[in-house]
Length: 536
Image (cartoon, rainbow, N blue to C red; front, side, top):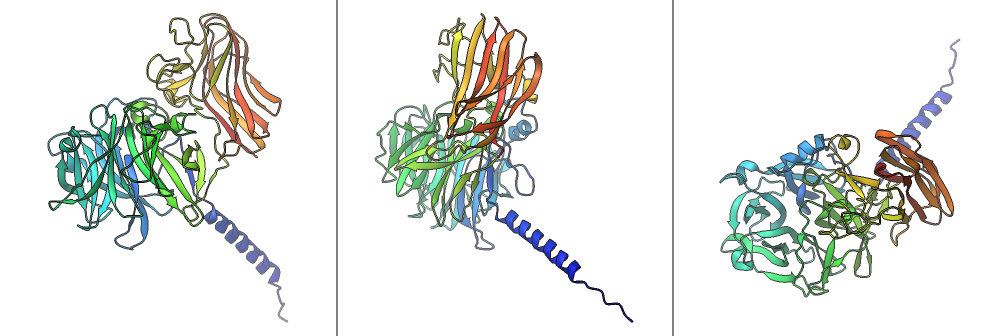
């Protein structure tokens, strides 16, 4: 007699296992793409992304006709060097190529290729190759790349948005603006009209900003006109976006490779008038950490099914400024009427289909936590003149007062050595010290903004410290809703040491984090890489 075997339990287990795996896979696929700042970015297949001073444009893929995002930027040789060893700031910029990356979600990028090579632009020897952008020129059915090239502007053309781009002509700006070169430049395309424009500043002093339409003149791609829209304080990093029918002109300070506030003007017409007239405003939120330690690079407006989201795409010239990790710092912009607000986030999620964004669960809520926003020793008597570290407050209860008097005032930040930078991020750290006996509090109040909520929950506060002997008190703390949690540093740490406070309860959307110190003359404590991350 043949024995009948009941396979139903085994089949049920297999079906349940398959269903669970399918569910997990579906959830993983449904996860909103995440943008993480303060680190070097890779393509989706793990290759380094090298793209500085460029822009993102949406074109149809010539092979599939699918709309894709094309991201163009410069690859400098020093970007490789600094990425491999960020303990050394590089003194020069060596052009390697203009790169092109493509994406369908603005997060996962594929390397398309080097679309403009150094051999094709260095015909007369090596020269500066910098900020650039690409426009589709309908009259010629060509894609035109406008590139800063030495003391003029180079225009290159391609049959495809993926290149290769080839030398078309080099133009002098002298007849238009009085200098042969642009100060800084980007390309802006108005999706409502299909027209593209070069947005740029005056080549000498950069105290004027212009708009020129891109088109065909005398059979060649060129600039058709020139409208001056700003004259005043020197500005660079010129770029533009359009939101709710208004044109927003942005720029940064003349700080070289360093970070800056983000300044803006608004107009109803691309040629102006831009208001406030010749008086650029600082975007709110960008003042807490100099626009997430970056310089205005370009913007991209995501027009989703549920909302429009403007993305600030900042350049962090870390390879030449030494101010942290990552060359690209992208943050979402919110609006109070026509006033833009900068949301400085380390980690956030973006859904390009809906246009919605949200703070990611692993976001670090500390502003200027690696103390890289300030370009000089603070207090600083020279541009920018300031007495406090950006995003932080220092209260002295005993010892020398903080002032612009460099002979008596304590210096609030320390310039890390190359050896320090093998452990901590960037050129600078917090410096708690004085020439005399001192007592000091250094702190930051973190609270919900109109657009980013500091959620109630349990957080972890951490930092890296390096300290001498001579402290009666040396404490890291977090205080929320009247309750203080602390970590007392009781031993000397002659090398960098990570300290951490777990299970910090945050309530009512506000927490104060900081350091308390009572030390003898010349005792010191250096602090770097402070973070506050929600655990649950």
